[in-house]
Image (cartoon, rainbow, N blue to C red; front, side, top):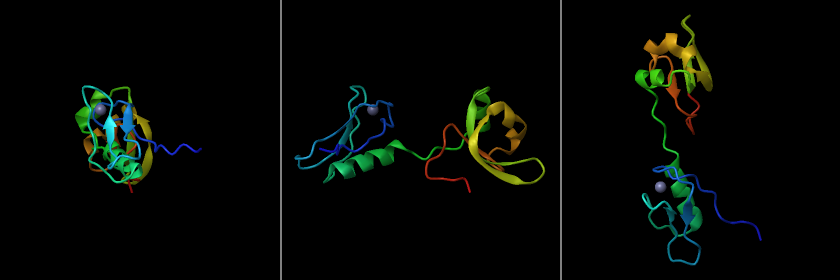
Length: 127
Ligand SMILES: [Zn+2]
């Protein structure tokens, strides 16, 4: 018998990977975080597929672009760069991780010619 349990992402609020989908047979299906401190739950859906899809939409919020301060705080870390101006007046689309120190000289233009994120923004290609 194939595994029909839909894949669910970690909890968007506490990061817990313990996420339960109410089994079929109940009147409404819902997804709930199994962490005691969190226990966030979706509203009821008619199928477990809908409940897990709703959970997963929530679990992948569109990330906000980082501010200059946030980038500086990540000194030595890596940021996801969506686009940048190469300093010669050309905006290049990059879409990849770059070490923060390599972007330092462009920090004044953050938000104007380039955007940085902690992780790759899903559903966007920066273009
Ligand atoms: Zn949680």
